[in-house]
Length: 175
Image (tube, rainbow, N blue to C red):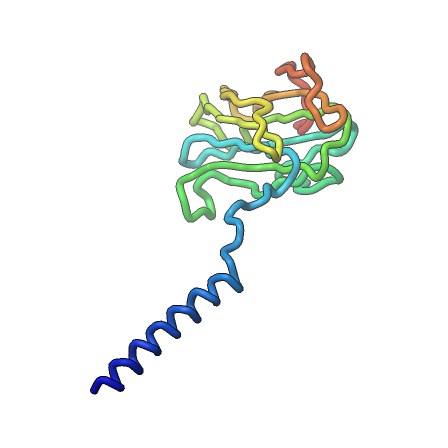
């Protein structure tokens, strides 16, 4: 009986050391996830049958939005149509940039399917990949098919040029 107890104690200690050794060989990975792009634009609006479109543009490149989801600098991650073909009541769109080339950036919002549901407040946020907030605010769309500029700014050397931010409207989507 004493030999059996000693054997089980030895096996218990051996299993403990094996588990400890495995934990050291395969340590846990860093849980942080790198952002998908260098500049991230997010737009959210109330739930329901409301279709707001996020449009972004850099310099003279074609605008990126629901009908042109990717360009040289920008990509739209998803065209949210309100609650149509959607498994959640959340309404949001995100666009990301690949790189931060110098030039003017324009971020517009357009009320594509908002008839009878206006005004529509659209919370908008623009962040750099390192987490730096470029701008955060609410743009209120007051009529169907209305397009408003949430933010315009200039980038130089990967940084927002001080004093370049404005909300002066510049149409980038068109009719």
